[in-house]
Length: 590
Image 1 (cartoon, rainbow, N blue to C red):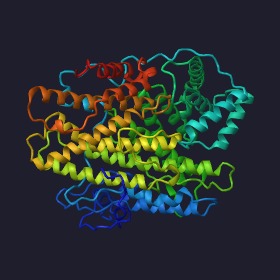
Image 2 (cartoon, rainbow, N blue to C red):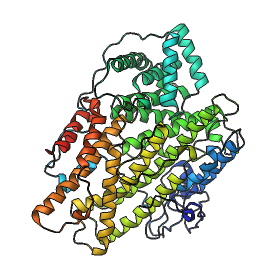
Image 3 (cartoon, rainbow, N blue to C red):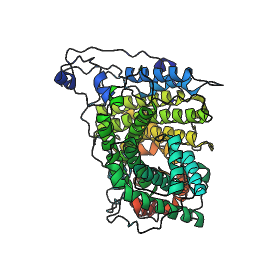
Image 4 (cartoon, rainbow, N blue to C red):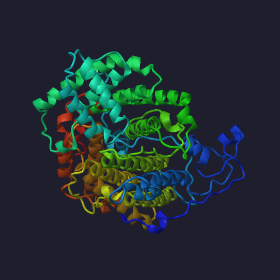
């Protein structure tokens, strides 16, 4: 694929097309519709499903003008703030080019597409796995683990200060959903008076529970065995969780920002615990609480782009996007109801608006955190669009479908390249060209590069299935080279993903285990069909797919990175262990 950006694409104008008929939402409201396709401006801002009458020509216009406008507004805000060197905001406007809607004359995105998970179960549905498909659930256990009884944790100031710093370093920099000054005051109150039954006390307990269980990025070379120190930290996390869960019911009944923060942090804690269904349940509750608060919160519903950005408005935006992207990530792997609860949320801006960093002593760190956050949201928009594209692919495509798949893949690759080239300079990384990638010390750059690798793998994965399930062997020979090129690209990025699996415990650990398993299954499928074709001495398109002989070494490395979690029953991890070990040993698809 071409990793370099296309300057023509990045600076293309965003035309507005006018239709003769308003969409159903605007027609019902009897308001003017701008007729943008596939989503009009009103529906885009409110994340509503935009439906036009089926007999109209859906057109091919771009629908990213609102996002461009929002990002341009962010740029002007930060350019007015102090910055001793080039601000990350100076590159944010170009970031919006990676989240605009596709433009393809013969491709209109249906609004009623059923979004299908793209994880382990999706790959196991391929024909090649029919005889080896496991019967056990791979994402949850039938009996949730008992949390047990735990003593009240130490709430001395040194203990809470350490947990506060750990939370800021490992979690807040990725999801700025709490005002740190307010958190510090609440921490001091608990240190001086202990835990009361307030929502603030619940929030402090959840912050501490998350801080104790998470690992920092510097612990990448973690031992396959859980150390005594880590066991003590997990025990400490359970003590704070025991405090939090007794107050969570009261907190969730409050119509406050703190209540939403509590539910969101509970979801993040469950992700650390490798319990994705419980996490989704709490993210869903957090989304409902956010909706309830936004309906009665005058500032949010009445806020416009020309107004200043208050602290509470900033937190509400950040909470909305954190809940939304957390749900979206789970939907990549789980068959959850669609759409996410915050898909229809009303926000005046398409991207969250950062606070005024002013002369705060940590202004540069806060600014960096916010632009990482924006980069992550932009990547999530591209991933969602890609998942929708893959969901539209028919189970048994014909040549016409395959040609459309190729056109769509080319378009998505262009958007991925735009996203990469538009990242702020402080987050720049070289795109991997072979089967290995240089080590990255910066955790934010590491995650963004992982997003890039995942995007490139998802774009090309449908072409692997065309090869391994022999769906394109009899098609026009002119398509064969393109199909196998994409399939070889998928193989390369699967190997890269296996070497990017982070071994430290964090919010994405469960997802990392699933990613490693998916990559291993794809490589094993290609290997098996290539061996079958060689034995049968028959033509198979998959024979032209490049698969390094050392692919099993990559699987072994990926499995070793998450070895300490594979014996845990939570999240189906112990069941995934059998698949990973089977691929390495050759007993699965052998």
